Length: 118
Image (cartoon, one colour):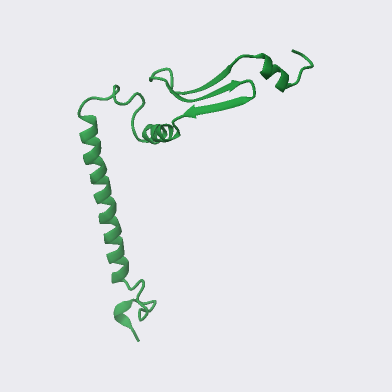
């Protein structure tokens, strides 16, 4: 094969298959893509959206989900996320009210404060 070009080698070989797998030793492996080379044709197959969905899930759920967690994990996470969202909204509204009370955003307010306009 030495001295031959890549094209000649591909014509001689029957099929070359390259597979991409995602996962770790402690979780299930999933095939994300396959590239098949036959002669002068290249075919790619894979589910890019499911791969993207898996990456998003991997960012938010524990490794090995759902088999690595108890049954009460999902309801707990839903309520915990709602609590986090409500805390964020409460903080934003409180900050807005506080800044508004001291005159931030009011064109007639002075450096001293909104109640001491000269």
